[in-house]
Amino acid sequence: MAERFPADIARDTLKLLASRRLAPTPENYQAVYEEVAGLLPQVAFPLAPLRRIASVLPTQTLAQKRIAQQFSAAVQAQDWTGLQAAIADYAQLDLGDRGQTPALATVPTAHTVHVLPSSLAEHFARVIESTANALGEEDARMRELSLQLVDFLRIAPPPLPALEQMLSNYSYRLSFTAEDQAQRRRSMHALLRMVSEHILSIATQDPHLQEQASALTTAMQRPWTLQQLDTIQTHLKNLLFRHLEIEGSRSDAHTELKHLLAEHSEQMLGLGKLSDSHAHALQNCAEQLEHSQDFKELASALHTVVASGNALITENRVVQAQLSDLRQQVQDQEIAITQLSSALTQVQDSTRHDPATHTLNTQGLHEALQSEAARNRRHPGPLGLAVLQLDEHAALAHLSPEDNSGDAQAAAITHLARVARCTLRPQDALARISHTGFAVVFPATSATAAAHALARLQTELSERPLLYQDQSITLSFSAGVIQANPGHTPQEALSQALQACEQAQRMGMARVALG
Image (cartoon, rainbow, N blue to C red):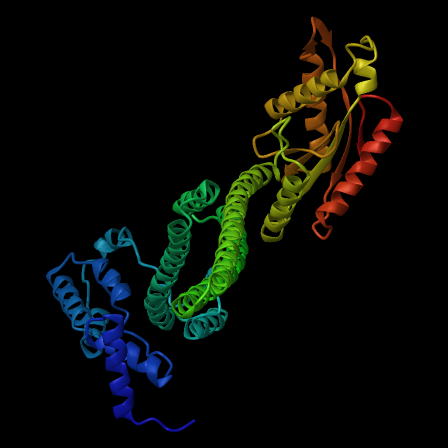
């Protein structure tokens, strides 16, 4: 590394003072100069401890008052020579009256700490390490200062004056880094808002796209917790997916329009050729009429003109019919695009929810499991997954064949879903995975606690029977509960829970089995 001259170090020091907006005091200049030059911080004058010592010095006599004032003046002026003289005078002072010694014993003594205790230094080091990890790898200088401070704190024991200087430099640098982090977040927020506003401005005719953009805007206005970031990512993915579909439909419509225009151009070109042929025939007829001498030549010319006119009329009719067909095709395609867009909106609305029970479906369940798996990777904890199967044979067996139909089964499924939503916690996700089966995701819950929750649901279901056609039907279900493995896919976890549910069904009705 090339040697740096003092003038260069002084110039860089002034620049760094200006960028940090620090007052050009001797203390600030010395601290920044040492940081730029890579020197170890100098030991600062222990002003605060010496002031505490001056405040407890005895002042019972005039000599004590004089020496105490001399000591305080030397501390204020940071004069080591004056301090030495005051301490020497106090040591040679003859108190004379020994009877005042007990009074001196009542004066509190200050305990000056010159080094940081090892346990407190270790706590400080862990705080600095956590701060460096939270700030990331973007600011290399900040991470270097953090590592230097951590190493210094783990020196046994770290001296307080040097630590105070290093903490002062670190706090200045940390304030700028925190401001950069806040500005980066504001920039990300502005970029996402710009994307949402741009898509809204170019697709004003799609209500579903506008709904997705509004949902993204609402999600961005809330505090950006990790869960809220997952929600923003989901809304942004749906928004971009819908925009890609619209652009694909627009591209297909553009291609079809070019095809229709090409056909129209070909028809008009053929019509133009017939018009030129008819004009040429009229010109020849006029020349023949001018030079004809008998009716036979006139008849031949007129026959040619009439034939050319009939061909032109026929071609015009054909072109008009084709144009009418093309117009009808365009209208039919516009109607089809509108119907497909409406159907697509309905399909997207139902891709995550079951329309009969208003719970999640299989796709929604997979997304919920993926979201909980991502949260577990950030904050490790248990994740319970249960599969419920309605015991319909036991519940609906006493109904008559006319009553025991699909309507009774649908009513039982709807009733089970309603009771489950009222009994389970708000954070528990309920999803319908089959005709008579449900799955429940229990965040931050062990398999045993999830089984207890299903037992409470079983009790609540028995206390709230289904009323169907003036009959009271008591429902029950069999369930299998597992603790999901973070390394398994949603499909693997669901398959394991289904096996546990099948085991519960083999054990009998209204049973809960742990997988």
